[in-house]
Image 1 (tube, rainbow, N blue to C red):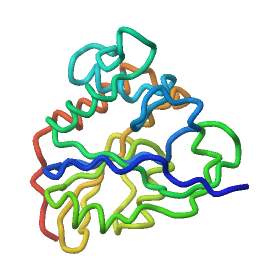
Image 2: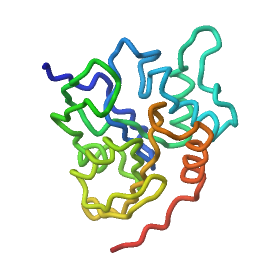
Image 3: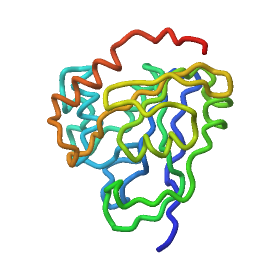
Image 4: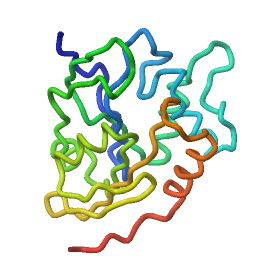
Length: 196
């Protein structure tokens, strides 16, 4: 099986304080836009619509059945949110979007992204099991429960890791319940992270 390289550049507003990390994009035939979480069957942007606008369709275009990448990116810049994935090269063992069949060949260069490109970032948020497990090979942190967090140091920088429930519809939790967990984390004030 061939190695697939990540098709998107990291989305890194220079003043970003939070970095969301998924696993890897789905096959391109499932994309509705050129951005992260492009699959219409994935509820990530519906969750964000509910959390911030009480409208699951807020980030959907009205003219075609697609997510609105421009609207999403403008919102993320305003909220100082960065996005990338934990894997930069994978072997897709089945031609689908399931993380269960992704073999990670190369993970992201977290030091390059965090220390050099988003120096104000204090929080990482993983969006699923594969993303969490892959990230934990790169940092010294305890694995948090879904909806929970753990503190860690990254090159002397105090940080927090939050583990969000997967936005995939395969994850057995209703959309409104996922949105409740996201809202609790995203609407909480910036954490006072202990030096340890």
